[in-house]
Amino acid sequence: MAEAKNWALFLDIDGTLLDLAAKPDLVVVPAELPGVLAALTAHLGGALALISGRTLSDIDWLFPGGGDAAGSHGAEWRRAGMVKASAAVGPELHALAAGAETLPGILVERKPLAVALHYRDAPQLAAQVRGLAHNAVAAAPVALRVLEGKSVIEVVPANADKGAAISRFMTCPPFAGRCPVFIGDDVTDESGFSAVNRLGGRSIHVGGNIDSVASRKIASPTAVRRWLAGVERKLRGHAHGQS
Ligand SMILES: O=P(O)(O)OC[C@H]1O[C@H](O[C@H]2O[C@H](CO)[C@@H](O)[C@H](O)[C@H]2O)[C@H](O)[C@@H](O)[C@@H]1O
Ligand SMILES: [Mg+2]
Image (cartoon, rainbow, N blue to C red):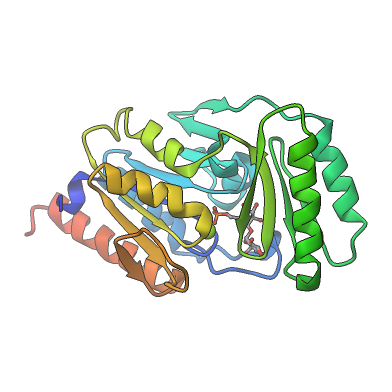
């Protein structure tokens, strides 16, 4: 395994960097976390990217600065301030969102390229929501797919894929030539784990309550943050000439 100074670090947000919350806008960014991420980014020559199901604008709300990131499960991708995005989706997702909004307890998160249907407050409606999502995909004139996460069912562009997003970063400076390390917590992160496994990197699953292709496990977001702070301290010591 490559030394930490040669890593390219890819980090999922919800359930990995941040503890899960009852609603998407109720997450808390611990005060010390942005500083740790900024320092890690500097130590790694910029080779750190956030890889999230959240939109880029949501990522920037949580972690201001416009850093490298893939949003909407890879449908949006930004490196060095330049954004690439999948083709915009049409009325089929608006109709799905409007339909789901009539279901009591379902929280609809409208994204520019996707829609997320949260059933955390109404788990008994999961099957119904799943049906709506699959019907929307089947009826859509564009290629979409259903992604399931923690208490959420999302419809995203068919080519939205965290593994593809990470692989794309790995072809570009400052990521290219480094050893990819990806930490994620959900089924939607499995494509990312597969990508870094293929590239000879390290895949780390948070929680460990699902079958995962990740090669390692870490207990919780708290443990992730502690581990990242430790890596940062080690790299800082390295930069200052300590062994
Ligand atoms: O890929 P991620 O960074 O893990 O983002 C996945 C989804 O995260 C958010 O939903 C999840 O977190 C919420 C806050 O903790 C929680 O209330 C919800 O039940 C989870 O599914 C976000 O709202 C989604 O857009 C992301 O796709
Ligand atoms: Mg997550």
